[in-house]
Image: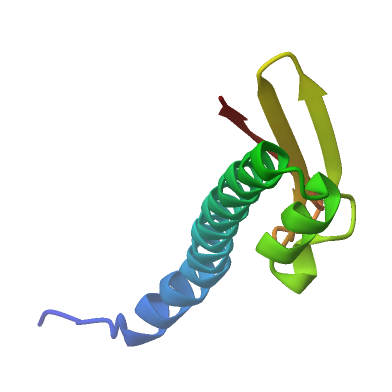
Length: 108
């Protein structure tokens, strides 16, 4: 006589063990999307600042106007020669990492 053991309980435990790993992967992917969005916004703001500088308008105002509201905190604008660099803080979602500075430059 062959005794068969039920393995449904083991499958449930293995599935539960995967949940934290999958959740962490989702958070890392979300962080990557937020970083890309922050970089894209900083790049657009740097170009807007250079356009404002070309026509004699205030660079700071143009850069702030081009950024989404959530990225204005931690904003740094640096002008060197023919380049304007905008640095913003990306929102953080992965525990232990926090906010990450993202910089983008535009050149004349």
